[in-house]
Image (cartoon, rainbow, N blue to C red):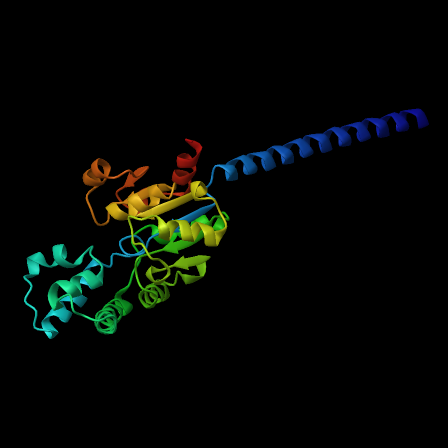
Length: 262
């Protein structure tokens, strides 16, 4: 009887040992799967702001309309987007006020103009559909997020505060920190340097021709969202790795597939 009992205990020990081996193998497989999956994710995802986090063009048009009216500058409404959407403020000031403006005068005009933007957008700011979900998905999966924009710092803080997105971004690079605007890659290269990641390991979300070109010159993957320009035009005239109609068609899986395709 003692021999039988000992034999049963021996079998139980063997079964326990085998079960532990299986559990260890399964845990190891899960770890390897997670590791391999993370390897195909970008080290960082960098967002532009205007036209990416938020459709700010209506508010920019509104600020310029008020500005021109108050300064008695005639601009036809149908021509306004071509005149003011794209060029830096200083170029527009010189066009309408002349080349003799001093640096101090341009700064004064710029603050007057952008204060109008912040007053208009603050109470009405809402993110583009799908962008908050993507940001939360990236954050939950350990992907570092950053913002790289041609906007001034005051506007950025106003928008991020209104959208309640500021805590998600590890770093922010604005126009004050750069010497060369997009399509120069400076803003994206500086952002990668601040994050201490390689540019090739970064994914960028843009909406404009110059933004896509800046990201590609920086050596980064770029997804362009068709919030400002039509999908067909972006596919034909940019070097974007992916053109998406909106953020609702983009997920973390989309980014993983871009980096797996290397």
